[in-house]
Image (cartoon, rainbow, N blue to C red; front, side):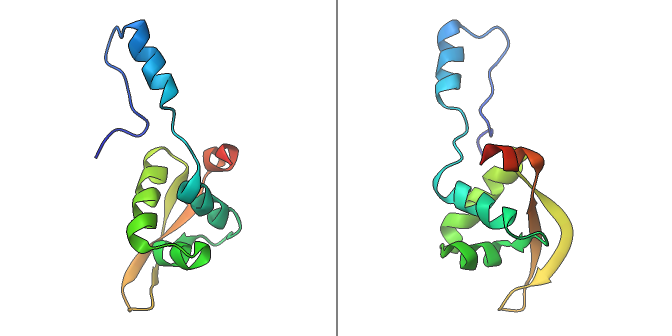
Amino acid sequence: MPDYPPTLHNNPKDTEVAALNSMKFNVGGLRRKTLQALLQSPNGLTGSEICENIDGYVNSVKPRITELSAVGHIFNTAERRKNTRGRTEIVWAITEKGKQAL
């Protein structure tokens, strides 16, 4: 999995810094919808619940959850809930950093 957000090595050239700044983590599309769903859910949501809430596909939404977690916009609450198939899922919640990104 790539770094989120991307990082630089020691002593980067000015062009590398400029390139990194142009790729800043974008909270748009499914990431934004995911954060908005979590913002409206004080008890958090599972990945499946997020998919239902934003009318998204699991194969598209769950990677966005991984990315948002990696940059500190959401966190694993340590709570678990069963999904409609009876499987246990992580309950996610939005962080202050995630709220500021909206």
